[in-house]
Amino acid sequence: ENLPATRDHEVKVQVRACALSRVDTKLLSEIKLKKELVPVGREISGVVLEVGSKVTFFQPDDAVVGILPLDSEESGVCEVILVHEHYLVHKPEKVCWAEAAGTVRDGLRAYTALHYLCQVCPGSSVLVLDGASPFGTIAIQLARHRGAKVISTAHSLEDKQYLERLRPAGEGVRQPLVARVIDVSHGKIDVAESCLEETGGLGVDIVLDAGVRLYSAEDEPASKSQLLPHKHDIITLLGVGGHWITTEKDLQLDPPDSHSLFLKGATVSFLNEEIWNLSNVQQGKYLAILEDIMEKLSNSIFRPQLDEPIPLYEAKVSMEIVQKNQARRRQVIQF
Figure 1 (cartoon, rainbow, N blue to C red):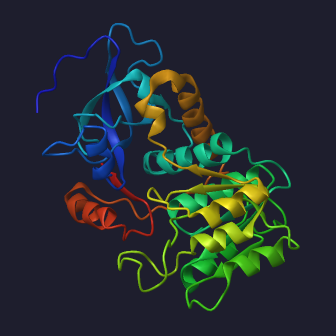
Figure 2 (spheres, rainbow, N blue to C red):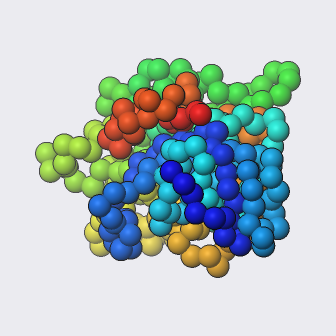
């Protein structure tokens, strides 16, 4: 389609890769952005074709990567797109298009969790639930890079083997990234017990969940995986002054739960990486995070869980899988 003229602060980008992630329709309707048709594909990488008259960060032929804002009228799944310069950063030469687009959102989530909702530091213990997911993988790599000890759960034998094989980049003999992998696939293993054992009974400093069960097995909705830990398990395994970072948007804590958290002086934080784009107050910090993610990709500190890049004609099928939360690796469309 014919694009409108490039406005003052806009950059015209030829898209080279676009990663697919779930569209949160509930969030969109809550912030009054829900429309009949919602564009999909917001994480993009590509080449700058032209820049608006007031653009200062970029010039034509620059390689860029970024996340389109929630209210974007445009879909990243197209050949040429107009983007405000404040949503983009430079892509390092060593990073391929698919990796740049496929890591930027998981990187942003990991930074939000481990640097802003809590401060991960050398010697702290971090439990990453479902560590073999695209987000879990990046969170493990960031936590280990910061000197933390990482424990993770695996949802299948394949995931367990993947997590046990994870090593830091570099030469020489390298310790595994994950100190202990807890295989929850057959439901016999007690996550809380394993974590307390691994931390000498002290509990874990930081927990990153992938959703939690709130009720007993019979009352839980069928859509919720039985592999997820119960909220009581998380509260039990948290250490004193611990941070529970949750992706469970409807988390319900009863007074006894809150009392246990109070006794531990623990915090509960909600992980919503969209906050960076919903308020422009932190724009400078946001761009610094994106630059840092790209730097860690180019130094191989981040090694993402990507599927083989998919051609445009398979995008619809892939997006359906992503929307149903069935993709185990990040889906990236390559142009």
